Amino acid sequence: MQIFVDLLLLASAGLIFSIGLFAALNGKNKPSKTAFAVFALLLTGWNFSVYKLSGSLTAPDFKMWLQIFAVLGVSAPFAYFHFLSVFLDSDFLKKWPAAGYGTVLLILGYNAIAGFSDQSGVIFASFSIFTSFAILICSLAISRLIYRENILADKKSRTILTASFCNFIGAALVWLYFIPLLPALGWLFLLISISLFASYIARFPAFEFRAIFFQSLKWIILAGFAVSPIIVLVYYNHSWIAVQKNVALALASLIVLYSILAYLLLIQPMIDQLFGRRLLKKQEALRSFFYSISTLGSLDELLSKTSDFFQKTFHFQRVRFFLFDDRKHKFSLIFSNPPSSRIKKEIFTVQDNDFWDYWASDNRILTPRDASTFENARAAYTFARLIKSQDSDVLFPLVFAGNFIGFFALASDSLKEGLRLDNLKMFDEMRDELSIVFSNSILFSKTGAWNATLEAKIQERTKELQKIHDKLNNERNTAKMFSRIIVKRELEMIELKKKVKEMPV
Image: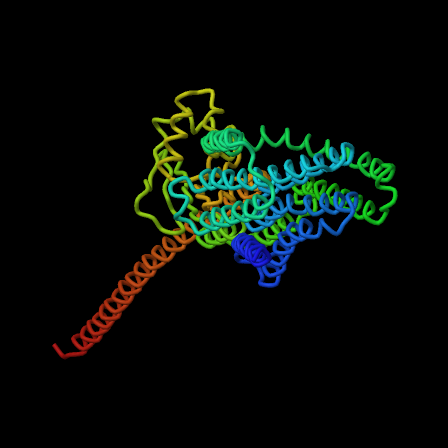
């Protein structure tokens, strides 16, 4: 009966872990989902098996294998969160598993020096459940930061919450079967603290939170790198480990593996920035975009190409372009994808010259977080009103020779991909070149319009000259006709006079 209960709990925990990983990897290929689900099931099985086999192992062997399996079990929530960050393609979320692996490394180093004991098992179990619940709360907070209106209305948000909840239940089901609960007041204090912390960061700006909080996590992981060689030396020189060199080698390999894994996750943003596929793809798309628009003369074609580039490369949902009319002092909406009738199609600049003059001279890309950078309160108010009225996340100016050409109003998707710092940096790099292209296109369009007008006037003048020419020809022909008639009459008069003279008197 006990074996049946153990197997039932094992299957339940493995199933819940698998559901969480399937949800976290939703949209990826099927072999990867299957492999990670089996991986989670094996982690769960190891944690059960090591306790069931403990009676047939000697104390040192049992402690060593117990520590290895405990580390794998504690790492399962961070492995899940790593997969989830890959699913969301977010460098921000990749910092969390890096911090988790670094923390596991520190705990492992402490146990290497102090020796694994029953108290260490309780610490591992408590830490595993604590991190699983923390990940659940942080997923809720991150979902609220990204999906502000209703976190259950978006499919990805529901996926995050479902996977996080399954991960927490799976970890609790595995560990609480063996390790008694911590004192009730301690658990209550931890849950309240995590809830208050999650409530705080849910109201905190995501970019400021990213900049401040993860600096401390980076130092924690670097501390893990510093102690990892010491851990390996301690294990190889520890007296009660010397007999079991194969087990010590396995544990030392595990430490080195976690050190490398945490290190790679720590420098992952730098790798993405320098050699990452995503950045390379964006740079290649940028080169292809400028190559494709280099031969375009039509402003409509240029706007269509630019809209496709913003939407496909940076996942903007809406792209609008306002063209500036210097004579009328206003911006006019000439392009919108998708079309919208609920926004202002004309923006007059007469009353808000402070903001427009500052923006034309500063010529920077503006996002909602730039509202606090304006020294002029009136300019800050104009900017806040403008970005709210356009329901946009990025205002992309086009300025050439100190004069406004126009600006793009861009609205991001639910994940705010367009507001990533590397994307904004790429916008800043392409701004001047795009301004030149649009300036040339608008000048080309105006020149074409002027040429068309001039050609129409030339054709009209030609027609008028042709009419005058025809009229003169008609008058000349008429004059010739009258001249012939007059000559004929004169000749007839001469003949008549001759006949009169020849008549006898």
